[in-house]
Amino acid sequence: MTVLVTGGAGYIGSHTVLALVEAGERVVVIDNLSTGFSSFVPEGVPLFIGDAGDENLVEGVIASQRVDAIIHFAGSVIVSESMRDPLGYYRNNTMTSRSLLNAAVTRHVRNIIFSSTAAVYGNPDRTPVPEEAPTRPLSPYGCSKLMTEIMLHDSAAAYGLNYVALRYFNVAGADPLARIGLATAGATHLLKIAVEAATGQRARVDVFGTDYATPDGSCIRDFIHVADLAQAHVAALRYLRQGGSPTTLNCGYGRGYSVLETIDAVRRVAGRNFAVASAARRPGDIVAMVADTSRIRRTLDWTPRYDDLDTIAGHAMAWERKLLAQRQGFELEAISA
Image (cartoon, rainbow, N blue to C red; front, side):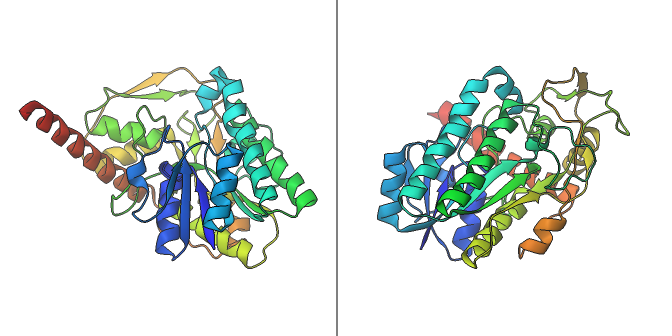
């Protein structure tokens, strides 16, 4: 049995591939490397460079690698970008997912784990937000993910697909051993931006909106460590293979931190200050988003290990310092050459 991971060279995908390999699974990756890195794919894991929406490629990989389960990460993930290019997001996310599901149905792959998002909720009526809350996405990104959830639901009824849709809250941090992490240029993740500022790579951190109806005026988010999220995928795979029924699960810790509190955590672990500036609100941003995690905790055999903001920030900082040292080393080599 083999697990196909689409987008397995990207940030969350590569951490999940690593967790699967360490759990003894046989893994194969499809990634077009638009935002991923081949060096993040563990040695011995086959990497097919191409699009997850290429049905011929996907069907060939399923057949040749004896795939029995798919974990689908591949797609575009930036809210603000989706506001500027909605059709691009419906192509990269919704249409790609449709093609992938069709290939799975054609090749009789029943178990699917989908990388969804809390953005499907929009501004929730209450927090923590449960999975049965109304879905009212504020961005094409959230809409594109919700459309895939609907396709999964309908495909389960029509074709017997079995799936887990994992709705991520705010993913952050890096591998605790600093083997992999977030390396995409121009990343929009708050913690990534803050550690870049703390290491002198950015002039400041912009806080988009300081007049929200929250205790300090900035947005509130539920951060989940990427390594804990990777383990949730491993647990979801076990759940499906043991006959678990289709389900949708929030992935967070059930605890919210404001943007300003998160910046302070980075300052603490970095041991240095950096500039922070107030900026206008961004279209599509959600005011407060905290997960109700009761369903995932009773459904999956999953216990988070890194439920601490300073720990998440510390691992992100260690990874960023490693990246910076590598970059500076390459620059010195170029100068000496």
